[in-house]
Image 1 (cartoon, rainbow, N blue to C red):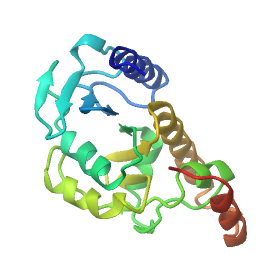
Image 2 (image 1 turned 180 degrees about the vertical axis):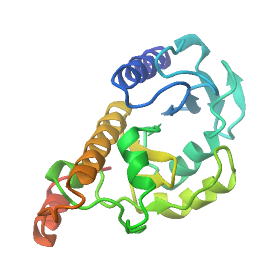
Image 3 (image 1 turned 90 degrees about the horizontal axis):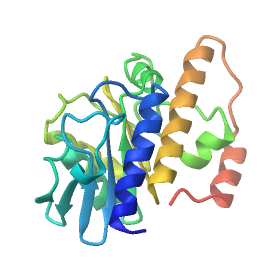
Image 4 (image 1 turned 45 degrees about the vertical axis):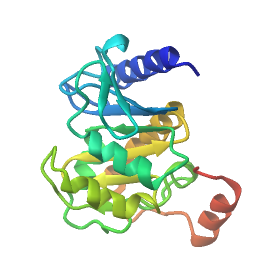
Length: 211
């Protein structure tokens, strides 16, 4: 896909997620890997009103080549890409249900959400919790780097999910699946729900690849 088309795709998916309430205000950011670096949504921008010509273009060293300055969490994206060579795009949102789960005191930091559905296991698998860092703290990149090699997604405590995919479409769909599973978890939290067995999870992992 050409760079021009990728810019349009970032704009289209950004607006779609914003319009459906998956992220609000100027929260959330998107990036896509290109041949000589990355395209990223600019700092302070709303995903609902992106200008494709102003999307940030960074070279392989992370230096801004063109467009507006990138999201202040650009290092978060770069850390994820460094650990996941097959990642073509990354989505980071402040989606309500995922953030709500990240604030719960009784979640397992090694695997935040239970395997409630096959599609969650197929698209996300295990979701670790990254300890809280203030937004823009460069130390967050190192914290993610330690987990990203083993996981396609991580959940930032009191902040939101970071999800990688082969393509932007794949990353968006996985993010949406994570958000819906977080919603199910909150709905079922006090009801001791039935979850998938280890055998069922292993079968899904053998059959479907996340990368």
